Image (cartoon, rainbow, N blue to C red):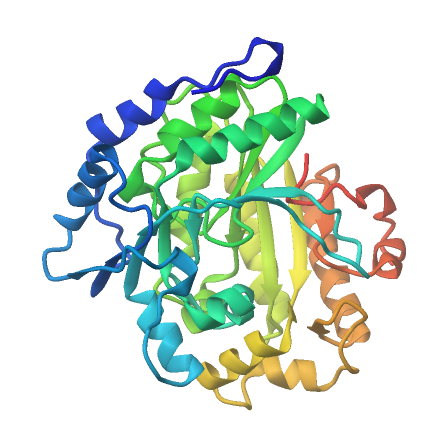
Length: 390
């Protein structure tokens, strides 16, 4: 394995130990019916052993070799977008990702573009509003993916971070859940020590998972920031099927805080259900009373048309989210559809007030919002200091 500048070396033994010693565990919310071995899956004995260990956990899953196809060209057969979506949620693909480290390219909103990386693809959870479900790559092949070239990915991060030569965040959670598949792979036991040892690279990981057993004994050096996506229990039960309960996520946050990890929360998408003011106030009080947060980020729906179409295929066209969106204007300059500004202002004003009553100095930011919204709430100092960056 190559040695990076300034004397930092990625130890190949990290990954060797992870896939030879680590014993995979089944993921609570994932039961694949098909396991597909895509291009690169069987390129060496280490990968073969790794795959075999995971396949043994799912003896009823049909194992299919498609070694001539890359991970993003797996054809799930004919069907409408909703059928493909759910077929993909029950399909696990092993492959390799040659361009797994990228810089985001948001324009026309306040999002600060950031580096992100993908040891996984997509997610086994079933959030009805899921933004990623509407992207081009996921629409064609919405499978749950594990990428086997982890050391290549970390080497790419190493090279980029050393070139920048200052502490730089690399985000795990933009194109996947950052921790949902970790019981299967044990990747956290490689990735977190890598960032702990690195002079510049820092990790920010976003998840809905409550399974943090692999993280608690690691020496993270404060270089991995853990962030949870959260919503009140009533909203979770209606819009976040097949995912851990918010109370379980909060318990996981407490465990990781006790292990010294910096902890953040993302409350998004905020959904104006009946009596939403009390629903969110009660939820925020539970969160803030139980977890010492480093930062909290708030956000409303901001989806592309394909994702909204899939959401309506799941929930019907008259669902609460679509009703709120229908009051708004046309798509925003960044191509997304949002709640009308008046509703967003009401929502943010209430949630910010609740947070300030509990912790007046907690940094608050907004996700994918307009500059004027930040100005309204005196949050301009938080521009560029939201969940995905240091």
